[in-house]
Amino acid sequence: MSTLIKTNKIKYSLDKNMLSKEYDVFQIRTTKSYFKSGAYIIDAPIINNGVCSVLFNSGKEFYVLMKHNGNNISVLKAVLKDADDFDCITLSKLQSNTLGDEIVIQLLINSLGNYTSSFFKFNNLTGHLYCFHPNWLVKSKKSDAATILKVPCLEVKLSKDFRLNLEVHTFSSELLKNKIEFKRKRFKDYSKYVFSAHNTLRRKIDGDTDKVFIMRQTKNARTEIPFLDMQSIEKFNQSKMGILSSVIESFNDNFKNIANIEFEDIAQYEVVDYTRTVAKENSKIVSDLLSSKSVKIIDCIDDDYSKVFCENIKRLLFDKYAITANIGKRISKDYLNIRLIHNAAHYIDCEDEYKTFDNATVQHVTFEDFSESSEFAISTVIHELLIKDDLKNGKITLFDWSNLNFDNDISFGIESGNDDIPKYYFMTIHPDGCFNISEQTLNLFEETAYKQCVDIFENAKINFENIRGLIKDEDGNINIIKDTGWITIPEIANLKAELSSGNTKLRGKEKRGELLQSCLDIKLFNSNGHQYYFVGTIGNGMRWTVNRAANIRRIEPYKDSELMFEKLLPLMNVTFVRNGQLTIVPFPFKYLREYIKSLEENHSPT
Image 1 (cartoon, rainbow, N blue to C red):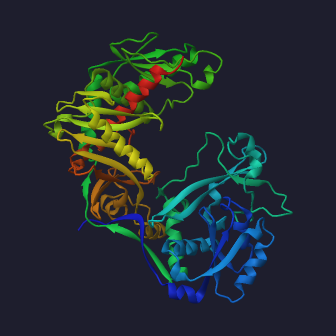
Image 2 (image 1 turned 180 degrees about the horizontal axis):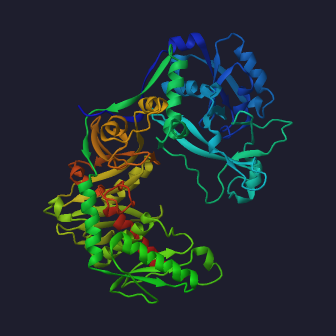
Image 3 (image 1 turned 90 degrees about the vertical axis):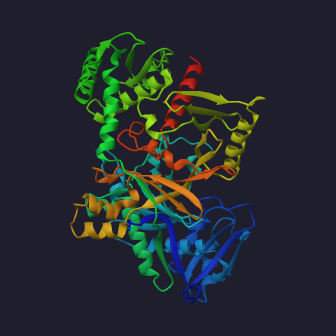
């Protein structure tokens, strides 16, 4: 029997009769259009110790959970009376059996804001549950190193279809407000919080003199919290899966007489492993291609530093691929050209050196952003060059297309352009790997195909769905790849137990399969009449850290089309799209994106 795959969709038990004996649930509703996100009235109930939690998503109402007590109505009115627009609200007690299960469970989750740990804290702010860890804090690098500039956190949120998600947010100090890009709201319009002695944030109240924080990230910055870290129990506890493990453990312990949460399992699935043999075959293809082509490094900076930089690139190419590159000053159509320039900031007051070349294969490298010693960085450059060369020549060479044994053409399509003027592009690949790319336009001969695109993509927008692309075979079958917002979950309880016992040697094949099957390689499965797949990290020789979750995507046949996606799984078992990692959609979509990008660059104003 194969190891079960866990997803973030929960299966749960909930005894609402027992809930009613221990807790009261209240609905606070406004006669205005809606409660503003972050409004003080939403945080006001938490001031009272009798309030267990508050839940607010958006709209005209929010919910309050309190320990069962006959005086609760009076207590709530007392804490709310000083809030703005108190006269516009109504307060009513609800019967628990009239509430949706997702509301009740989220209220119970939010009540974990009272839970404390030696290494992280939860807090129920403005109707949401946030988790804070002291090691996530961003502090000043200047002399006053104790000054906290950013407070990253994870929001623990249950969706309407019972998926438990962890969303990263960042609270930034008022010291950074000049680095925040404000659009519809100004700094003064945001809810203000102060950092407490408990390594969390709390609502700013009258008399607070500490620096305030707002939930906004600084411009061009991003907070990264790893999905899974297995280096030690301390590192695990700082990762998203460590937090999730503690949430589930605490929830089931605190509410064992009322509710219980587990993750849904997938028992039957197909696997495509990225084996050493596949890795060697992929590597050999790249090496063989480079041995038949010449590489040229073009130094467009031409100073002492750039000369050294180009020599280092030349050395990296030789060390990794055993090829000797030329260094010159002019682009050549007979070469794969690596063109060294400065990054965009350098060209603010002069002409940008980034250019497109119709008859030559060129990959730009920016002096300031390229990691000279990085093997991955040089691999990325080479892969991008070879993809561009394939686009120039109209033939796939990075993958042996004939191995798929297709007798007919197969097409890959995506939408581009803006919402007002969408465009549809298709890459049609022939059995020998040759291809052509064209825009699907409305004309007398292809009216049906164009209307199919409009139907597929516009319906997705109406239903708030995200389409990654569509695939069409010679018989007219269309398979659509859609995001689900659904991810896979490793065996976090067992992982935590192993790491807590001091066992950090979890990378053996057997142990890896037992604990991490949900995060590895490519899996295809069926559930409730639908076909799904996900692409995880490469299991063979995997690292201690998994930075991102494996997103589950649904394969949806258009109308009465047959499912044919299964035979396309090898198109994701390659690493030349996401260097060192498997690609999350069939790689022809990368070719399409690069083609569209080249069109945009050729038509951009100079």
